[in-house]
Image (cartoon, rainbow, N blue to C red; front, side, top):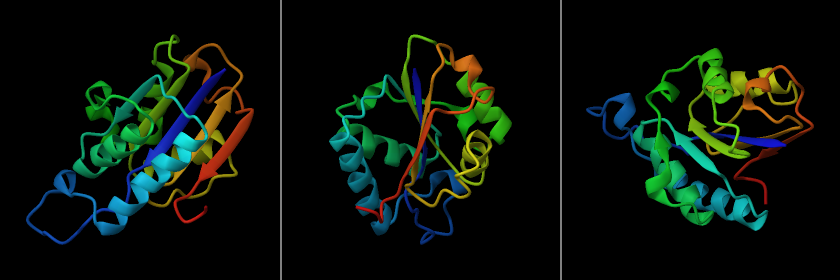
Length: 162
């Protein structure tokens, strides 16, 4: 069994026009939603073996906040340049090349790529708003099979739902 969490970064700030897209931080709502989502996942006893994040400030900040709630060490978060401005196919390739010793992986990234990938994995997901977590359980032994087999379970976690 492999479990994949696709996490769209929390709401970011557009207050400083001098910042590049990659440098934009979380705004107040993002700083409220990310810990709420992390606490919700912790309550479900989610324990990732690997956390990958886009290098964008807003994605990495979201990953760090949620990781803290899951007792995942911040220093173990892998920042992966391929997750920024990646196509859905690029993201799928990253997933398919994961080591099979990891059974639970979280990937923090951006739209529209995450929504498109999530929809490709399950047509029940059409859009991932900020700080939404799409959870996919696969009855497979190798990550290389993701996208070639339907997930056995799909759950969408949204910050606005309790």
